[in-house]
Image (cartoon, rainbow, N blue to C red; front, side, top):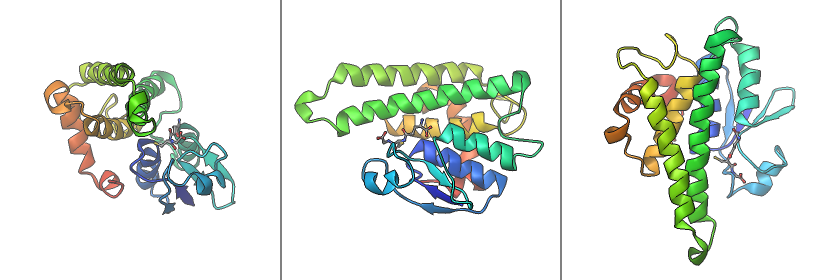
Length: 201
Ligand SMILES: N[C@@H](CCC(=O)N[C@@H](CS)C(=O)NCC(=O)O)C(=O)O
């Protein structure tokens, strides 16, 4: 199995973490979404990471679709996203919020990185970052500091996405130590686990 993408991408990294948790052997081709567009198009016409090439040669694209495949193929009776019911919906909700926060952080970064300086629109950057910060604050309010995971009593895809999103948000200037201390503590603790450490960008 070949994972295409760099772990600097939160979308790629959540797939890498998921592969590690499930114990699936894989190789990784560290291509970047913007720097290696042509090479990525060979696997994903959209030119985006992540893509996952299965041993059959078939390629899956988009982290949500890839993770759906991994849950079905390797999650057995304890997939990282529960198969149904209220637990599934609560995990999907946190994961969607966290991935949305990542998208907003990246839109803000793209505005600064991909436009000429005179065309950078700071209010748009501020609006994106405010959306990301509000989302993380809403997650912060869901966290019970006495419980080891969010939102269930076991590790789920919600926790995986929390780790990658909190890291990106902090790198983009959101002060999670000051404003989301429970989220910061939870993700720091999780980030020390081997599944997370081996994927650290
Ligand atoms: N919804 C997609 C988002 C993937 C994504 O935005 N990847 C970024 C890197 S973090 C990328 O390849 N960007 C290049 C582009 O959109 O052109 C997923 O979950 O996989």
